[in-house]
Image (cartoon, rainbow, N blue to C red; front, top):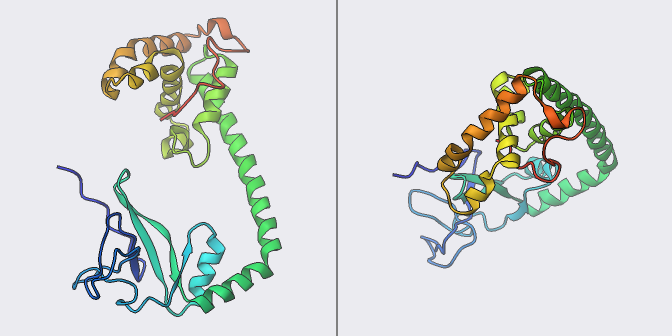
Length: 248
């Protein structure tokens, strides 16, 4: 039995973009691009008294926030993501006059907001570089035989901001031993074993991992014992720049 879908977020008025052809329960017209759910069935924007609102797609956080501030009436628009099993925000419906006022406000301070974004980006880049260095140092502390260049590649890949990889998890940010070793194991799995080829040939994920587990463990044991071997301070036993993928 499939797990129940995560309900749409409760953020005031809510409008849904249906995935299938849906008709209004009130006027029977359709298919409708947007519907408002209610006890009497799904109704179109006109029947729900929201037809005068305009759609603002997601993407510009400042414009979205200010448009809602400037609108006496607004609604959040969501659509169900089947793969993730949840509703995701697509944008907002706002009053046209409110959107125009918000656009004027954004134009007035666009330069200041750009400078702030650049300052924030520089600060994040410095923070991320320090974290990647710390992650690589922890790899080398736990697995002293891992080639230095390989440790840096793994750390850089695992700690990419917003990637959802192990380095960005709570355990990864805390540099826990489990998270750090998991990142290294994932790199070995993808780079030094036929794991990806097994997946491409239709082997189930758990079975593919079982088949290559001994090879991964052997490499980790070698690096724990300090037997980095070929790579030394330079390149590891296999090229990694173009091949490390999906450390999870």
